[in-house]
Image (cartoon, rainbow, N blue to C red; front, side, top):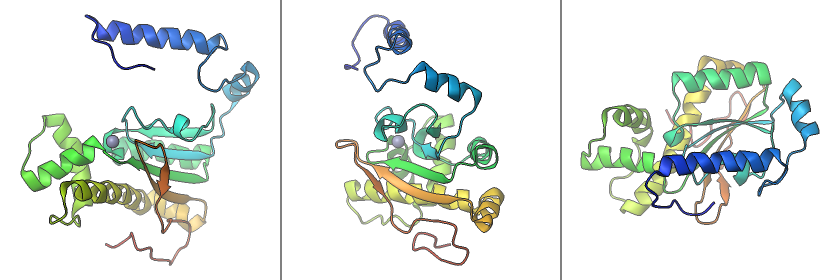
Length: 220
Ligand SMILES: [Zn+2]
């Protein structure tokens, strides 16, 4: 898709693009990998996604495209800053209990504006609009160990990874997360996508179903 144009009614133009894109899709003329009607019909009866992803809303990190995954493969929650909230918890619980996806991924990305805004609030006293402020409050606890002496660029990188680990920890420490780990039925992984290359870097110390193993990322 090309850059956003400066038309007088950008919303209408965007909607038209969506309509046109959907028309291409259902006409079997999508620019992206095609999905046959047989596959759609099978998925209409039942979905069995293999992976649940909690990712950021950022337009540059669509999980299905990043992972070249087709319909029905990924169960995705996207929210700015890939933050954990009660609604996210409910969605993840559904994925765990009903869809039984074996793998959960928290997917952050370099250059995340939500983390950047949280860092600005923490270190520079920047203020955001009320609803955004609430969002930032969900990120801030995870940034406790980010070194203020780092350069702005390094601070953002550290903050992005810390924020992924913070969401991981909250999932892990939720009652459902604990229960499923004890059952040995959940693997939880953090990852960070690079915007300029599209490369997804999976974080080390994956939080799998070990009951006693303390990973380096789970200081409490
Ligand atoms: Zn982001």
